[in-house]
Picture 1: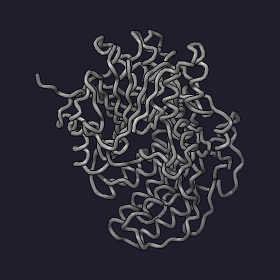
Picture 2: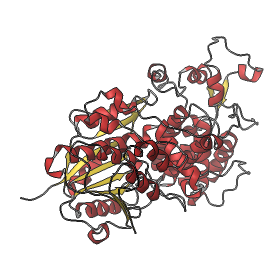
Picture 3: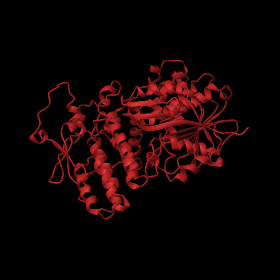
Length: 530
């Protein structure tokens, strides 16, 4: 299926910049950023991230205003819980005096930690995370936030991981006990621990080995995922998430800057058509920025920009599937017409040369964002080989940086739970602790990490991906300084716990949260024989 667009002859050149943003998002929010164009125009790094997001009343209507749970009921078998995130934030007011507490809160808090089957006392250590300063205030919050990295309490994983091991060992009584404890602790609207407990409990209950283990009604609401979300809320969620978190926005920024650099620095490519194969998770949100930069680059826009969306090429994974009825190409085509850019959009289910419809003389870029790490190891190798057969001029590969480790269900679940913890912890800061429909959609989809196999992306790191890319005939390229500057400038928009790491000896660029790797972005070009 092909969609084409071109300059609108009825559109005045003086009017197109006044309306194209609203056309693209249709009363939602603006994703247009000028950081790419500004970086190549010679502006400072501070000016690169000057984009503004326009939120409308419809976004506010999706917010869930129910107060967050600060405590949960306890029983003889369920201890007093750590206070929820909202309660912690209230302690950070300008009044240094600690609020009055009930006698239950004055006692030493106890958390069910499955070590030797007993409980572990949590005294002052459990109270300190409330004063770490993790308030999601963005810039300027790095100092106080970083102080809590080693002190944060992550009790959810101390329950979920032994439960996964008990499932593997078929220890039914232990699994049933941990299920009941997690049932009392879980909450989709609490702090990151409560939410991780809720998503983890749901994933473990759905594990095949846990079938037939009955527990009392969990009483929680069903989780929203991309596939089950109404298209209007889905679009609002992904745009809002790009606004408040660099999880996807940062690698997209590096990819766009590198594509623009490829087209700008090589004079032979100025008049060429640009063909981008999109194998990603942005669902169209990544491309307005690149299109705008291409339209205003020195030397003029390419005569044709082709965007081939290959949604079905790799196996599906978290964040890959849009809900039925979601359509971004009509908005993107209208946006391209408003900036006098000739854009064509194709859809393909595989990466065969006939399906992608390659043309002679075009610059071909394959952008793979968080889609290569699903399926088996053989599936990934076959997928990379299909990319290599296209003979692209540039490949952008972004993936989760899991660091490797043991295989098997318990070890794989523990890695995925740690990855989900970083996602939930960072979204707490991104949304400033507030519950909302958009946050629940993104977190519900991220919880699908727990459903992936032990061989999935969280089990691998950039070194293994480097070996795999080299084995199929690619050589790694370093990012240009303009792209690195754009990435640094973009991160200033977000919470201070985010950081970019680009080691001098490595070409890939990493995105880290609180001193731990989250993802990496890398550039590749094929080895070509003379």
